[in-house]
Length: 108
Image (cartoon, rainbow, N blue to C red; front, side, top):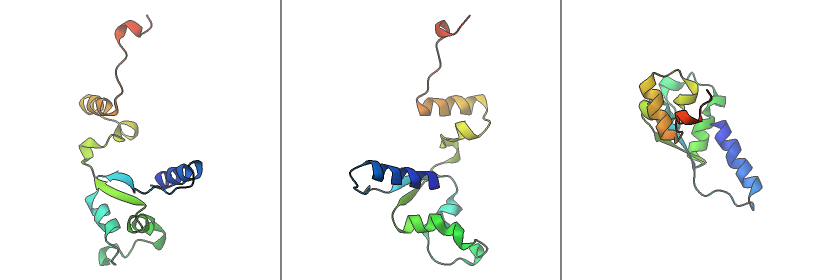
């Protein structure tokens, strides 16, 4: 999340100074976390969350980021962060556009 905000700020500094008009989209698979971030009201179940952790809620409410639901099976970033079975790895690899090197290019 903070990396996305940093990249957004870098883009602003490298551009002519125009602020991006669209929110940065963050894909999330945790619907409970999304509902807490989107609802600015106090929740009794979330009272243990420290103020410094309300960063996401603040960025959603000011329009800097937008949270979109993405099924866990479709989280492309999992290919870089988790050990996956062969089927899941191949499916996510295809989603990223990375292709297998043909055998005639591999060293012998």
